[in-house]
Amino acid sequence: MEIVTITDASHAADVAQLGKEYTDWLVAAFAEEHQHEVPGHVVHPVPHLDGDDGLVLGEGGRLFLGLVDGQPAASGVLVRVTDTLCEGKRLYVRPEFRGRGFGRQMLERVMSDARDMGYTQLRAEVSVLMREGIALYKSYSGENLESHEPFEGHEGASWGVTQHQVFMTYQIPAEGAAMERTS
Image 1 (cartoon, one colour):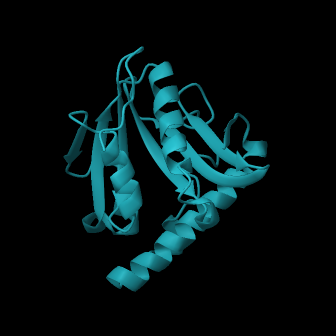
Image 2 (cartoon, rainbow, N blue to C red):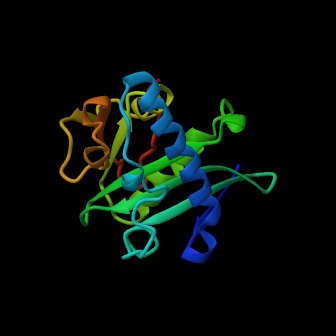
């Protein structure tokens, strides 16, 4: 998979489409598994992209598109929280591309760019419905991953699904140290 960094909102349509597929699936899954209706007006396919304030397309963030044979297959978003803390969002692989390690490749790219940008921690807010995603984050953890209470301003609060989420913060290895999987 080729991972492209999107630097301009006018070129973000493919990532926004992947984000819409992800959020449509997640809203439907919450309704089916948890009998919870998520209000449509709070769902953003790519948070912070509309009216980007530099959190995604500026110096503090990144927007990634994974391509397989020129076809959009995966997405990832890196959002600045503080000078040392960032958040990974919308790490998504289309169903027809799953099982080939593309989620792992995208997460490694997000973590690598985060480290290169000076971040020392990457946090994630993951739905309990995303079992594979939770396992992927945990596979890189070792002693570097901390599960914790919801962080302030988390997206799930506006969706009303906090009780169905896992919150993690990953300590990004220093430059030169490998981002090794532990399982």
